[in-house]
Length: 299
Ligand SMILES: [Zn+2]
Image 1: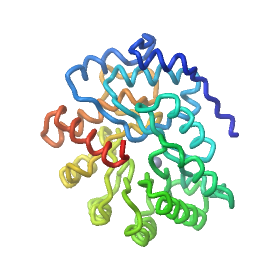
Image 2 (image 1 turned 120 degrees about the vertical axis):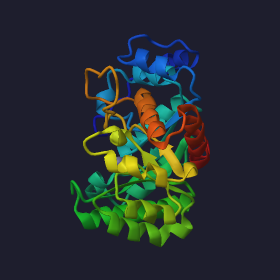
Image 3 (image 1 turned 90 degrees about the horizontal axis):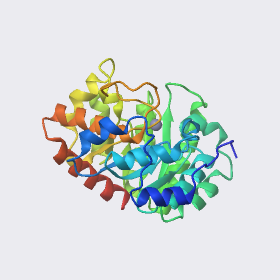
């Protein structure tokens, strides 16, 4: 619909599931050596339908498997990307899952049919959350009143389906919190993905019993230090890890990758930084966050 194409062959995916992992991944060797003794991880936010993965999506999945990922949740950010994410997830049941939603950037395109389309996508068994939805007043790619309307409608969809909600908020805490709070009692669960906010914002979300998604933003020595300081305030059973690939390449990856594109295999670097700042070993943090993700998505 938006020029998004799926170039994955089911046969290739089956080979991967059987452990026949292609060897052309750009960064599998350092990652694989780091993770060899770790419990499996779950990346709760991967934009695998993004066009930057169009030419090597199968290798990205293979590298994630080689890096020790047990599952990935593919983020839907529009009707088209939610459809593609669900189609990809359907090819690897038990490893790939997806969400159905419309990103606040695209809220201006939220039409009369959008909720029905997202609802239809969400009825597939491997679609495990509504979202990505929320408010983004940082970029203001869509008018704010349309963002708020699309957000409220998707929260209603989450209530209606009983699915957890995958949330995005940037520079819009007050409005976001008010809309979320109004529906909170009717929602099952929610995760504020890619949390980058203040301590007050964090506590507002924890008061609503939200889960908190931490990305490679926390690995950024220029802008992630305040998030590092807040890690101790997140209850262990509310912490989730994600790459938000292809965005937010962790800056602590060594050796430094050649390109700028992030991949789910890099989740190990987010885990490493968070474990270090919390003063816990990576294995116990992997176990905890994987258990959290399974409970959150019901997978
Ligand atoms: Zn987001």
